Image (cartoon, rainbow, N blue to C red; front, top):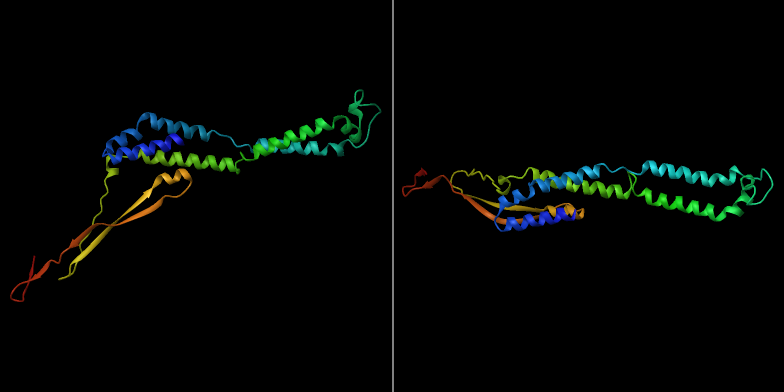
Length: 212
């Protein structure tokens, strides 16, 4: 993302110095296009942790159910001799530290894995970044020399002896705001150009009307 943002900044510098052709050469170079393709391909191969979370939750449930599964001793003995025959109260006395450690490990793994599920925060952030790269990939792929020329037709529809003025406005949008997760902010420049359409009729000295 940092390299892509720097690239877009570089295109602005070239454009401001009057090099629109150099902008196209830069962003459509095989190296730049390949980098974007690789980033998109790699990101799309990412696998969410939904399955891992499900298995960890199942393991956590099994650990929590141990006291109910082994309520009483099935034999006699101490921790070293017959621990597999001890009920929960005696077994936990022997293995309480290990049991709590296992619970903590599973709980920490769940906390880490949950943010990478398909509906988690990390997945949402990754999807946004993929979208940004795809957005610039689409723009740069379609870029041509004509992309740097803006043309607007201003029709003249005046009636009889009235003149008409059309004032053009220029709408600018900074697309780099998408890197910050914000929509492009529009900026309007008023009075860029004024087009005056004159009446096709004029009066002569005799009071008649002539058509120009």
